[in-house]
Length: 314
Image (tube, rainbow, N blue to C red):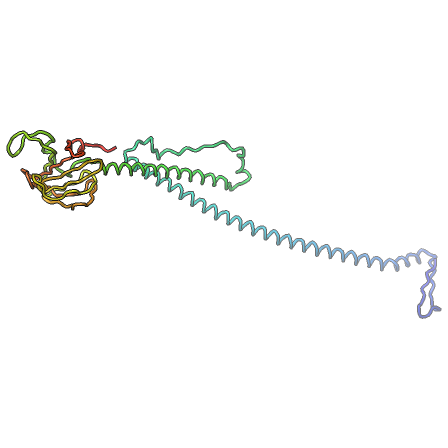
């Protein structure tokens, strides 16, 4: 085997190597293999560097994405915690409202003397509904927003029920109050005693039997005389036999008279409420001592005031 090296500038100076021996072959292999090995090494290094840069860039990008996701999760967690805190506060407020409504309802029921079975504020309101087929929502939702929503719905239902009961109770109380105000009942004095009944009696001046058209309540001069029902003052002044007198016109054809007063404190045409002071006790007119003479007229005729004095409003 021969290897010829030619000089481009001087072809006559070409060199010939004879590789007849194994040593010559080995030298040729080394000479030819060095450039090839060097090329492969350099190419391998370039490839490794390229993949290493790509891997590093990928890692950086993944770290950025993970950091962003962590920030998003933290933000959502914080927002959720704020929402849960707000919901907890609202739940507490709703429970407080229910407690107040219960207490107020019980008190109003007692004051109004209403059957507890009709307005039982201490009893839980009726709740119900079909069982849901999906009973495992809490497993996939650890925070269980649905449970909070259901609690809100239950509490709002309870508050609505209590408020409905209170509105009905207020209506009953208002109706009872109006009936109580418009219905004549009770005594015309805050202190004193009945000294003379309605009907036939012995007259204190001449001792003969004579009709007494009202009842008398004795007391001390200057004691308060109060109205036994709301109405309008249709007379306030002196009337023969009655002395100083106040007359009140009520609903349903009722008229009441309060006589022998020391002083009237209401004027003609004014309105009065039940229990309002209308005069001061005295002994004016045909009288033997401080007292108030009470008459009750129904459709123009006198009736026994005793049945109204002891009357109970229901």
